[in-house]
Amino acid sequence: MSPAAVPPIGERLREERVRRGISVRGLARDIGVSASLISQIETDKSRPSVSTLYAITSALGISVEELFDSHGGGGGDGDVPAQALDAPPSGNRRVTGPDRQRLVGPVVQPMHRELLTLDSGVTWERLGQLPDSHVDFLLITYQPGATSSSSGQLMRHSGTEYGYVISGELILTLGFDEHRLAAGDAISFESSTPHGYRNEGDVPAVGVWFVVDRSH
Image 1 (cartoon, rainbow, N blue to C red):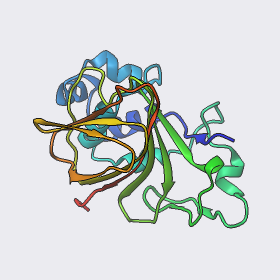
Image 2 (image 1 turned 135 degrees about the vertical axis):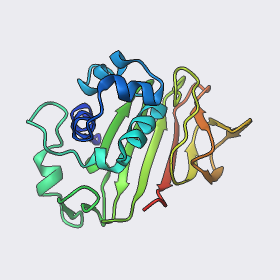
Image 3 (image 1 turned 90 degrees about the vertical axis):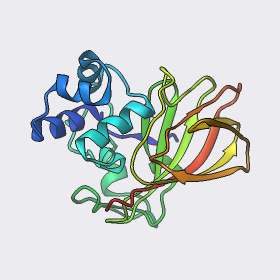
Image 4 (image 1 turned 30 degrees about the vertical axis):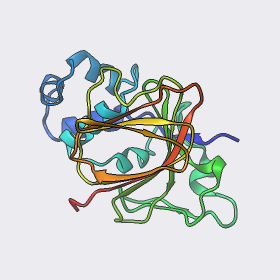
């Protein structure tokens, strides 16, 4: 069984933008993209790239983990099945609550991982969460040709990034340097350093990533 997709994130982003009194054009100007792209993302007509998603969440002052916690959907195709939320199998306890307060675990089985699909063949699967931990604990997959930004733009965000490549290869651009990451390679760096990933191979690149937001 494949992981359960989280509800569309566009509505959550729009709610936060409106709550903060930021216009579509203002947000687009702040992060250097077009207003039409923001509108398409908010209406779930377009999936953001990794770099664009981090830029939006940083501008709105929310974390990526809060997007996984958007479970207020109206029953559409993207909603997490009720079993995954309310009645997971024995040993997989999940408690709903305010953003960042939700326990995901202590055991998260593969079919119950929450899945976020981004632009160009990048997926994030949440592997767990402890309330108030402010850590993104993710299984990431970059399909062949996938990149964190289709425009080649590097991203910066708060926190510290740790990664371990399980299979395939990823090219990490970190500042002015490039690193080819193969299975078994591990990385760690300050996420405020401009960085980006791409998969130039012909097999998916899969890894486990921790992003620790120390601003909290």
